[in-house]
Image 1 (cartoon, rainbow, N blue to C red):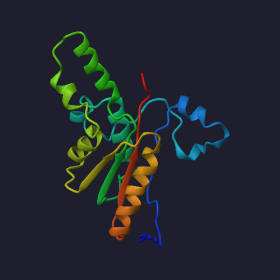
Image 2: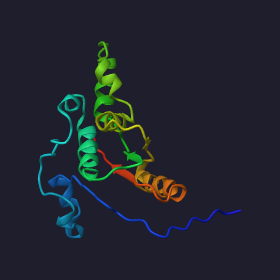
Image 3: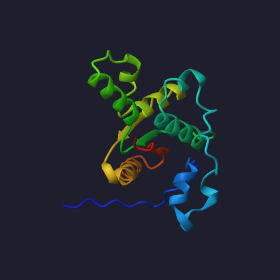
Image 4: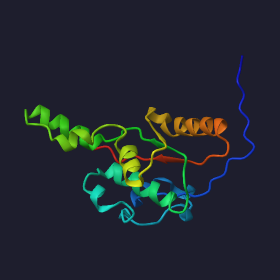
Length: 169
């Protein structure tokens, strides 16, 4: 038996995008300059200073975009989507292991795939559910499916979907 889902309305209430110039150039003529700020520096002003030093570049991207998107919104559920998560921290830890060095406890705790979502909940004092998704090249699609499924079950609620990745080393 197939389950069918029907949505009467799905609205984008707010959005925020960080797209560095080199990434924007990849979009060629398909880019809409209204969608992103044409700047190479990431705006981290909304991230509390106590969290900034604990963030990798990937987490800074995720938190910055998430906090900009919800500045004037409350959310009931958040979904963080990343193909590679905290790859820079993970690679640094692997390098330490290969050099037979002691692992940094801070880097170890910040090398998990749900680091950005965890930091987000701490920054926002959020007690609602948060999901972290990694699905290879289908990561964004998996995040959208997760979000739409959740909205089907909770039609009056508001969600946040954050897709983020940093360049692979």
